[in-house]
Amino acid sequence: MRERAISAAVIAAVVISVFLLGQPWLTFGIAALSLLAAWEAFRLLPPAGFPVEPLPGVVLPPLLVLAMGLDIVDVGAIAVYMAAVLVVLAIDGFRRPDPRDGFLVWVGGTFGATYAALLAFMAAILVAAPDVPADALLGGYLSAGQTWLLVLVLTVWSFDTFAYLTGRTFKRGRFLNHISPNKTWSGVIGGTVAAIVVAGALAAAAGQWLPGGLLLGLVVAIAGQAGDVAESMLKRTAGAKDSGSLIPGHGGILDRVDSFLFAAPVVYAYLLIVA
Image (tube, rainbow, N blue to C red):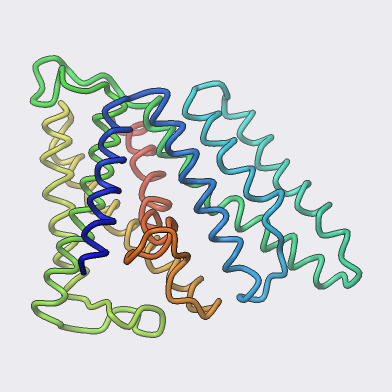
């Protein structure tokens, strides 16, 4: 417990410092996280049955984060990036004497690269976020991108925290027991309610329509939970308890960002469609 507390304090200090620095440091920080998350994903893939090697897949996610977060690409360039991932990793599979192994390298490498690259949507939020009105509760304190990134982070954290608390308190109904035995329906419901309340309040404080914020909280809760379960499925297939050991007492980077991999695209889509 002491080790976990020390690690959590150090992580919190680093995250808050980078967050307050703003751009471009936030994008650089997210790029570093995507690199580490990709590395851990590629370490899990071989024991899961995909004989992949980290390179070149681990290089692709931070490049996409930098491109989107620094606003130097358009939609066409992103499509080219995805095509490049498929082509480069297919060529990498050609080196295997067994075509089946080569195909598994291609499929596994493409998954590893694109999975970690979902963090690029966190960087994209920094660019796509609408201006926060000056008379809004959160107006004038942070940039628009920082404000909406804060909405994402606090909504996901509120879900995780209250899912844990209500799950331990009520312990009602196993949720996807074959993948993650410790999860319960009571935890999912408690976390979802918390996410809806937090996202609604923060969206309203950022000058947005309250019902839209409540809907955002519901979808982020679903996506964040799906991201957590998806990573658990990968770890269970690989026979691993944690994605890594970089954070003492907490596992790896992928264990800490799994919910954001699925939740960040939801917030980005909300900003484009609703906000």
